[in-house]
Length: 197
Image: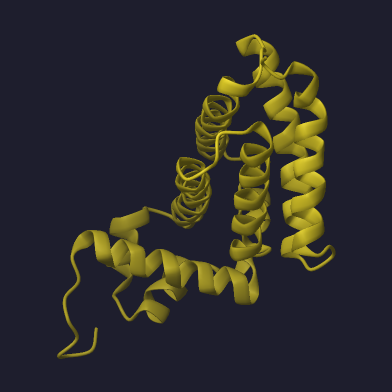
């Protein structure tokens, strides 16, 4: 570490390491991320990187968790400001999801794919997916008459479409505006017949 460099708190150091890791993955892919390279790029010793993540997989899982949590928080923040209509809720969910995918870029999908066989990653993905499903269900619940199981099934379907559309928008294969519009239409098409009176 360079002399005279300000010592960061543990939380700030972790954020710095995660931002550095995201930069490495965005530039060169997940195979390029090692704790040695992460430490060098962040200007810290290798033991500091190990202290925060334990392993390369630990760093990738932490990065995936941060990106996914950002997505959930963006949706919650936007929904808190939403006008009270189903149309507005669907548009906000679609916009926040696609925008987070575009912001993360192809790195989000690459990290998920790199850890596909990891039991820990599977558990993290399932946990975060359930949080997002609950967030969406809470948002649509006032506007539709659906049982919790039917609502969950529809939201899982939306998320499959959102993943595909967001990935295409992030990779530049589809304009962001198109991805948002199509996802909004899919959501409204599925939910409109269940509108509450």
